Amino acid sequence: MIPVPSVVKLVLGGFMIYKGRAWKFGANVDTDAIIPARYLNTTDPAEMASHLMEDIDPKFLEKIQPGDIFVAEENFGCGSSREHAPLAIKHAGIACVVAKSFARIFYRNAFNMGLPILECAEAVEGIHQDDALQVDSETGAIENLSTGKTFKAQPIPLFMQQLIESGGLMSYVKAFKMKSE
Amino acid sequence: MTISEKILAEHAGLREVEPGQLINARVDLVLGNDITAPIGIEEFRRTGATKVFDPDKIVLIPDHFVPNKDIKSAQQCQLMRQFAREQNLTHYYEVGEMGIEHALLPEQGLVLPGDLVIGADSHTCTYGALGAFSTGVGSTDFAAAMITGEAWFRVPETIRMIYQGKRRPWVDGKDLILYTIGKIGVDGALYRAIEFTGEAIANLSMDSRLTMANMAIEAGGKNGIIAPDKLTKEYVQSRAKRPYKFHYSDGEAKYIQTIDIDVTRIEPQVAFPHLPSNVKPISAVGRVVIDQAVIGSCTNGRLEDLRTAARVLKGRKRAPFTRLIIIPATQEIYRQALKEGLFEIFLDAHAVISTPTCGPCLGGYMGILSKGERAVTTTNRNFVGRMGHPESEVYLANPAVAAASAILGRIGGPEELGVAA
View (cartoon, rainbow over the protein chains, first blue to last red):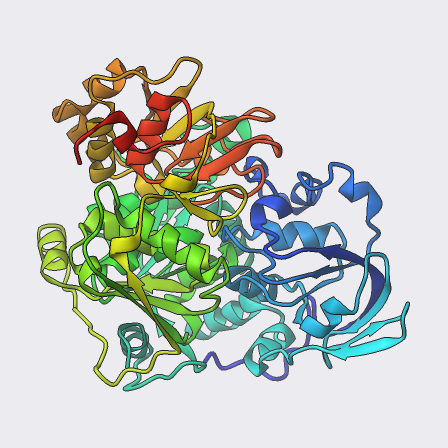
């Protein structure tokens, strides 16, 4: 396992409490839906964000507020390995994503990017479009402020927690580089 | 241990690993393309790194939007090209030598049995067909591995698929994998390894095996893998420029699930919009009129695929108002198809033949669909808007079905045309 320095504290997307409005999605939201491949000819996150969910709703970006939360059924982020997908979500101001499950590469990318994601089937069942939510990414507590119901997400694997706490994968790599030089 | 566990253990310097275990492992190859590498290269620079861990073990291939479709794509490729020169990378493939990455790497002997490979492309799982553990990652993992030569993995549980029986005419690897995805769903193998076994796999060509492993990701799989055999040895021995190792699952290896599939019952499969799991046998397709047929991609742009298409297209013409786009996956495949006279058949059929590119598969260019248009294609995904307009439709099939459909102007198999298998 990667030895994660314990003293380095959060830089990028560390543990926080998020409050925002829920945007509900179905199962198998794929990376082409999150950001269509025709816009992958850039490395600019702001530009990626400007095409978020465009093929689902061309006016999507005008409707969301910074801090809003995505809530989806199974296999969110399936398809391509493009990091443009979590980057577009993060840079559009979406605070976190709660889903029944995530596609594997998206899951990995989200942690590397510092986009908090939580797995919780019960929460997804108990949240409707536009509900007000409060999510604590450290404890995994998801509160539906509109209904008063609270849910508990699957705990983030310890290793992933350490990765987030150390500031994401690239911070670890920086430490590795300094050590080897 | 399973074959996947053995490869991971060996690269982590461990005697044993078990599912769920987190390991840090040395990688044999790190792959990036013109979409994912630019972000990774920027991450690489941001850390202050100046050198990659090994210039022989990084592969950069411009293949998605080349020859460049627009100025922005040209800038992405330029960034990659500059990085390849600056880092003295052995394996940078310029237009004219390149191919679609997952067809090129096995063909050139860059990936070998027993390897651990990560690639910043979801279809990196293709190389499992050679008995390698290979999996897709994002640009950040790609960047980190370029610096450290390592990556972290959670050892996946393995699903064993056993394919028994003889294939029907016109059924190839594409049909077996589409059928499998239809059976287990697009998240049926989420976070897991898929091990393809059984007599029907042993009897499958290497091109068809590559097609199957390629689409393991379409079932959510971390990797798809096939134990090496005589065919694997024949395929790699002339290509390999470094040692390789055959691994096999032990008799007492643990599987989270074993699924038996009777291949004799499988017809050519067609995945309807908008998920690869939405499959129907060709006999149940009904009347689906098409505007375009595409034969190509990392899934089905290999020589066997082009030969199959040629058998169906020979002496026939595509239907009026229907486009037929054929994309050999690498320059070598292109050259060989030309030598074998396949291009004559394609041109006579009124097909267009493209330089190798991922192009239309991901709605990049070279065959974008307009609103309401339908395409049958040998590619791997049929999500909403995948090949163009969000209101267009993509149907996935094998090369024989795509070719026959181009002739018919609607989705159908070669048997309708009376082509002998």
